[in-house]
Image 1 (spheres, one colour):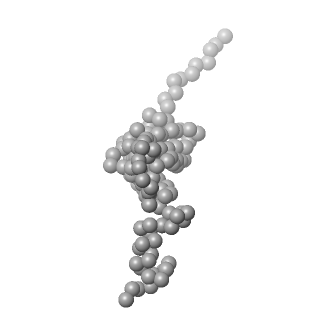
Image 2 (cartoon, rainbow, N blue to C red):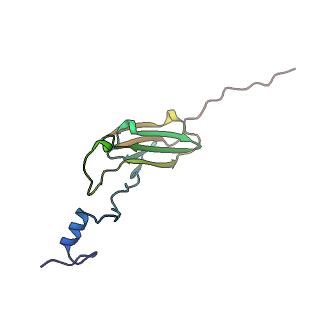
Length: 142
């Protein structure tokens, strides 16, 4: 006896539908999860861990503008045109994605420390941007 499932008559049919979706039916796995990010606060900094599975370090770009830290990543399958056959299911993502975080307008590119490994981008941001030391300004006497 097969147990009823939430989405169909039985588990076997649902499993087979997932294995080989009908032509023209959109697969929900074609869109990636947004860059899942954990943000941890320590005494002197914020640490962001951004999941980017399937991306290489060269695929990731960081840009700081108007107080926003922009993360973009793009990848493509270079062998796609050379491959023979028809895909019945495609779960690996190719394309580009972006995400932005407001980090404050005092932060500079030199303040952000970035490291990429095992599909995770780790960013370290100081809690307070280093203060610029102003040189004393003198008033000229006429």
